[in-house]
Image 1 (cartoon, one colour):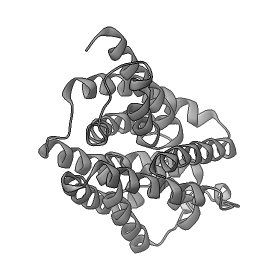
Image 2: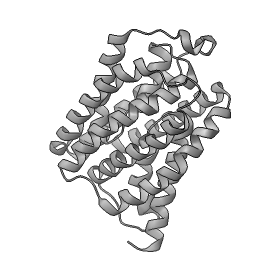
Image 3: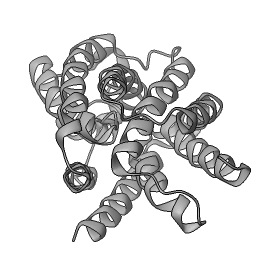
Length: 258
């Protein structure tokens, strides 16, 4: 790896992890297409879809640690929600991550495109009044949360994402969780999800070691900075930024597939 390659991978990891911490996502919805398309633009070695999904899985594991640490105070982490959705998504992500070894690159990209499209549609659904609920009075259907997390885990494990880009709209739209609690709790759930996806990718030889280390270093620096910024930004703005991000990524992926 030359210095330009190292800098490019670091910047991809830094930008993705900053947004990850700010919006409560693992960052793969940003870093997956960036890793896939940006290096070749600068004449650098291109990663395969399998390599990108493996690097993303490992990087998300470390990015979410930083985000959760930054949100550990203030009552934003809903332990019941994290327990039910975290256990389910951990199982699903391991199944998806391990099973992805038999899938073609086209199939992996297709799964990613479908997940991003579903998330984009859900983010434009009106979310009225959820931020008026006091954090200590939040209620949700536990088994619905667990079932949806299992499905998300399988799909996200396949693409090396931790699934937060789909978990966040589910928590906002279906479970009616307030925005800041959604962001903080989804980072914790995403951390659990990334364990399954990472183990699945590593055991099947889909992880490039050196690019992963560079992404990890960028994540540990940028994710807490993004989380601190997210605490100060208006929740409506956070929702709009996430919606636009997911929509842009879904559009790009589907343009490639079609």
